[in-house]
Length: 217
Image (cartoon, rainbow, N blue to C red; front, side, top):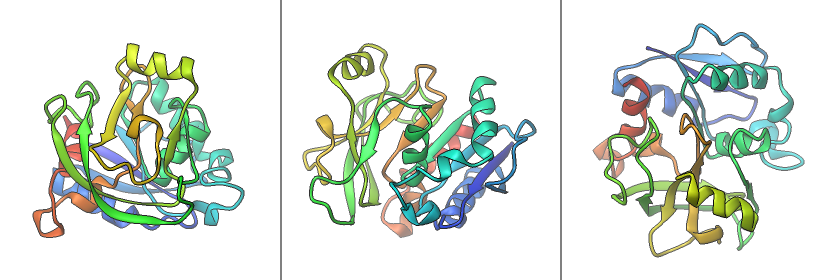
């Protein structure tokens, strides 16, 4: 299965994602931001980092690059699209997932391991987890606080679009501890925690590997 790993100037988790996809048994390929035709791919992952230095706001400049049209086309073709950290910010910026990821409540870069609740397993990325299963992955962001208006929140609950929530500790002040959401189909998913950094036990957890295994199945 061919999985594109999108690269922007400032991406820094692309090699980790590439490795995670390989561990899961996939065939990853780096894709530069200027490419438009992604139709030959089976899925894409937008990795974390600081695309274009997070100028203006995280994901803002990346959201107007040529590759976004290709990513939107893949979503229309019902192929899996996963955005991690900066990738999640980009997916929210272009409207492929609801809500926004904005500056942390405590406006500092936050990097730590967190316990998470898997709110839904209807997405390809969470299908190998039980609903409400507790998993462990790290976060590393300064603009990861999730927010959506009241009407949007009602839709998230009604349509089972909340993917991950913080367990107990809410390190960035996200609304209701939400740190991962998906579109209505469940095929486009944006998560702030880093599954690629939790893809092997030697790293502290292998829970994140299921995100990549799910893409391939």
